[in-house]
Image (cartoon, rainbow, N blue to C red; front, side):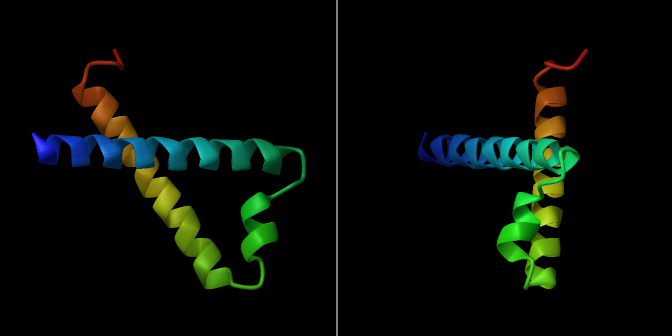
Length: 71
């Protein structure tokens, strides 16, 4: 039962990272890139943040497909 709780925690983390990424995309559309503003002087870390959020988006899509949320 405990490992199931940890899996739910990871799903929550993935979900919120995707939400933060989506908000950043929305802000980028109006000319304000929050990730770049925070990490602009560290381009490697900035790129790593984008990669992590992208991977989280793929994980979220796969999890939702497996749960039949996407039809």
